[in-house]
Length: 168
Image 1 (cartoon, rainbow, N blue to C red):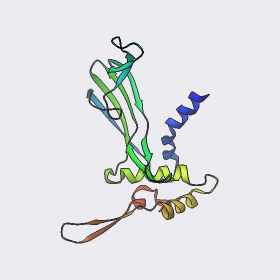
Image 2 (image 1 turned 60 degrees about the horizontal axis):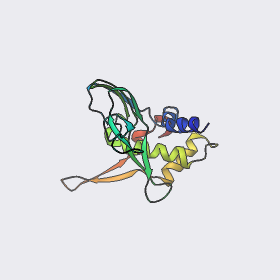
Image 3 (image 1 turned 180 degrees about the vertical axis):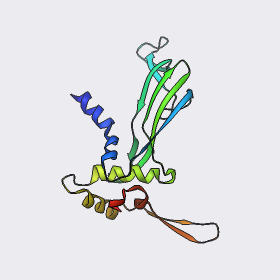
Image 4 (image 1 turned 90 degrees about the vertical axis):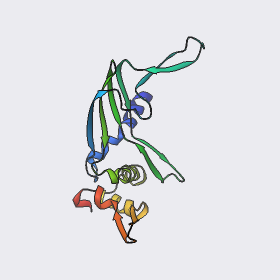
């Protein structure tokens, strides 16, 4: 039962498809092993023959690797930080097929996942979606000011870029 809860939690990010947020994208990579999951190339853990009781990582020759959505909280329980997107990888003798989850607007990918995490973990699931989004906008704002080289300012409202049109 604990393992089932772990698996369900590990794939919780799929719920973003059925939320007020625009659908994420999936990118396919085929070629020599080059995509990390997330920081290292796909690998497996084996017993270390030189040190009994220890394990070491070795490159994966044939098999699947997976990592879920990488995130953490920074200063408070509601201060979400995106680290890396989910990746599913199959390796076969130095070659790899990888499915990488992201967001089409690369500049907004951090805001996309951080806002979705706030929506998922910090809003009342018994309330309608539009109320939950309203709370997100109020308590977890995503309005930034960018200063251009010419001295002018550009205001960016990421919720307008990451939400489906009926929630903007």
